[in-house]
Image (cartoon, rainbow, N blue to C red; front, side, top):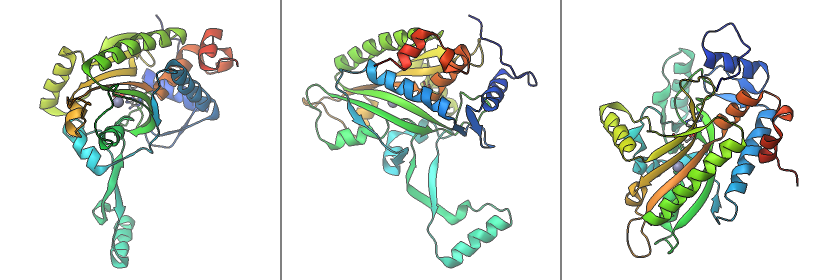
Length: 315
Ligand code: AMP
Ligand code: ZN
């Protein structure tokens, strides 16, 4: 498989060249900060096509739809353990809570070009790092799970502090997820079902995707061991698609198995009192969009008929 050439020739970095092309075509709108972009109407039409295609794939599963703003409670964020594994990716929200005199001191610090963050205090919300995070405390708050467990459909912008010139590595991006909470058997069936679905999906989108075992980017020395353990137990699989590099393809869809991690935290309980397992399938909507533009060109009207039918089926 060979990637089509990028048109920008002024930079040897193919990720930067692809970003330049996307900006020149008006698909991404630069802000001056790596990883933070506006999206054009055409870009958003592909986003909507992908979102609707995921809905059709899961139609009949009976998932409960939940939509949260891209914020988590600070309490849920701390409880999730995110700061243990990924302190470098987290984004917290702070606000000014002082009086007028303190306000003047903050503005003066800004005028002098000094650090003004000390004039703010942590808010009781933080930015959501993954679309599924808000649901576990909500499900736990309902009491014991029903016999059939829970199945939830979520979609959210997510924040990760990983600025990069690679347009596939954004700081704010959308994740569409289906999350299964239930017995080990329920979760195994969910993983088997979605493994087949996501492979079929990328095939219908005519994208050269391959499923591979993966690990999360855990922080530090302890994180290295966690990443190795995650791989050894095959807890995370990703659909990898070459977008800006053939040798280093991009993870566009993840299939994650948390075993009883979230069950223990909240705590969640099955009807019989057992700890539930959980798993989620997460579609990186921007990455899939960028993969489609990369492989099929910047004009969706000229994309292969099968790809268009998958995204925009005629009524
Ligand atoms: P993860 O929770 O890391 O498995 O992420 C779920 C999905 O979100 C991945 O499969 C990617 O498609 C997408 N994703 C993760 N990080 C980023 C990012 N920095 N920019 C864009 N998409 C991302
Ligand atoms: Zn998830």
